[in-house]
Image 1 (cartoon, rainbow, N blue to C red):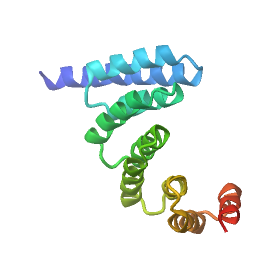
Image 2 (image 1 turned 90 degrees about the horizontal axis):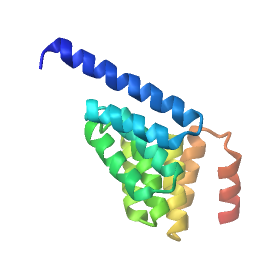
Image 3 (image 1 turned 90 degrees about the vertical axis):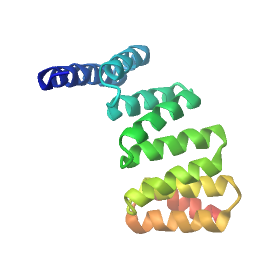
Image 4 (image 1 turned 180 degrees about the vertical axis):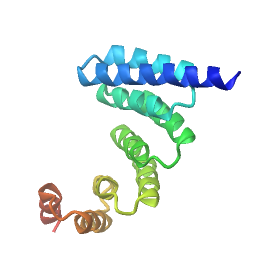
Length: 159
């Protein structure tokens, strides 16, 4: 394939990616999925389209499909902490807490100051009954951003 054709394909995929975002923003999830499917059929390496499609599946409570999309996105762009966080939440919702923690750890390895990854890891440890580890994660999240009243309340409840 010529370089010119590669650029055309990328632009076409980006157009469908943008259309998918607009559909998502207006609550048209089926249309968003169709746009993301089109973007990934044009450019299978478009990690944003895979990630966004996974997020739509999260909103539709289709966690297995979400995980597959996040798997694909993270295989293309393994340094996207949002993908790892969202994949972790999909596992959390499926009750696969150890897998969720691995994903949150990956997000933390990418950005150790990701307050959401620390919070999410804490929630998962709390769900598993690992209260001391949950408190440690919540405290780390608060050390990054002290203005998180929900986390402060969780710590009070755990003490």
